[in-house]
Length: 360
Image 1 (spheres, rainbow, N blue to C red):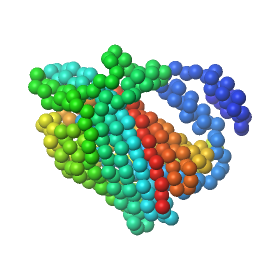
Image 2: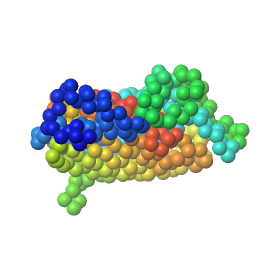
Image 3: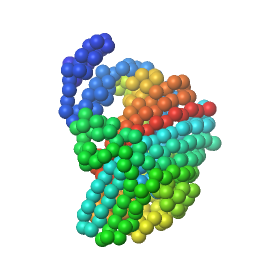
Image 4: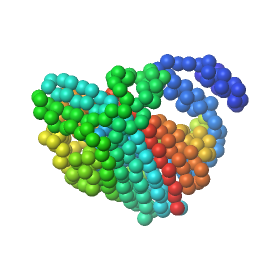
């Protein structure tokens, strides 16, 4: 890699040849080739960051597992909107495909389906240090269309298939039983308005550093029977931090966030196994490659929501999300990212996130 980047500028022909001849094995090898090669070569040398890049938020790295999305875990923020633009509207779509089969100590679980979460989010910076957020999602559970694509994706990156390559594509069902008692059995595709979220964010200075203090509530507007809501209220608090830095290869912003959620008792039969709180954390970095493009990678984790011997229900999550932000103008950007589960079986093993945001 060092030899490939020894010259200041590589032509398109040399770049193509270098990429074709260097072929690492496994997910991290291939991903680091794509991300690290550009990072090492430094496309942006000394250019000033735009307000859009300085105030770039993390990806929406939520857990879209059908038994987890019903809860109100916060989408932790690390920066307010730019001072010159008080409003932002975001259209977002998240597609999460899952295949999990587990059996242990009398418990049996099979999740085979795809979640489509489409929503609109409105941010309002109503005071210099205060910002409010309203998120209205619509969720659909179905068999989906990505099964075959994901098998090929996992094969190319050397990721485990988790058994999905041994079953027919296009199937749907969420099933959980314990000791012969069926607790969850959803075989029909469903969709409805999900739980609306309201958040309040405050920028506060501590030790000469800016921190975002945040609190939120989740309203019971979804349907527990359709797995688009829990049927109860949730509340959360959190703190976020982001720092910008200039290096020889350009500019980067790194961020950290942590939070806790109170989970109201759901209307599902799983409620007797449900925990009433969850802890979560987020860490990542934006690399501002050029004025119109930033690349990002982040980690998200939360504690288990249920008491179970099965990893899918009783395990702590760890997922990686990586992608880019394309800036059409100073105020409008398109964010595209892909998520993968690092602690397998706890979160969906393939997620695609799209977001179109504009400020005014």
